[in-house]
Length: 263
Image 1 (cartoon, rainbow, N blue to C red):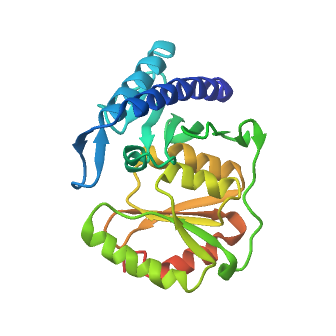
Image 2 (image 1 turned 180 degrees about the vertical axis):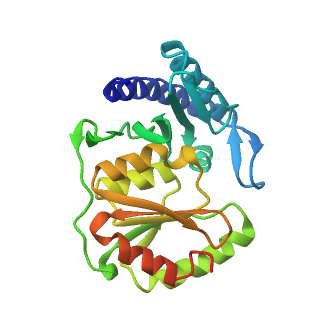
Image 3 (image 1 turned 180 degrees about the horizontal axis):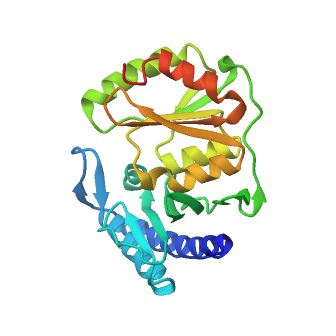
């Protein structure tokens, strides 16, 4: 079996190199290269360049591994290890110069994520985890916040790029606002999950995430004492919820009661 610490070390090394590329290219200016699910769901040339770098470095170190990435073609694994890559999570923030975007790299053995890093490009913070090895921020152990009553919880969320789905999500958020401390929309799902893991928020809910959005961040949440799960969202896509384990069930009940999930 592959050493999970070795996988994490490689992931962090490659993420830092990709972050340097992204930072340099951001200074030079950014142009939209393409769109995905809607005209507002953008891809930049830097997304493509960062993913190409990550693929090249991972496969140079481990040529038999597979890769699943947001921007490129999947590469099958013959080693049993597959990398799940988001070259820039928070591309719209990146496009506008809002300093909240990250490189996310996770390693899977079969269907189980065993190592992952979410590297905040502008702050340099590295959220890391290995299966059974705990979660860390820049090498220091992190834990989720202590559970507080629902009305005292700070919740992070996000919105779909599909107009019709956003309208439904806005109605659900409006109902949730009356039941919690407040709601934040920061713009990077991977960092949102890590913020729950390190205690910067009490919970997270968002519809429309893909595997590369949550692979590394989801492991960080689990290893920090949290839980995450998926439900069918009101817009027909995957709804992801995360919170400290002790307050998870009542958060799920609140989310369902406010209309985030499909009826």
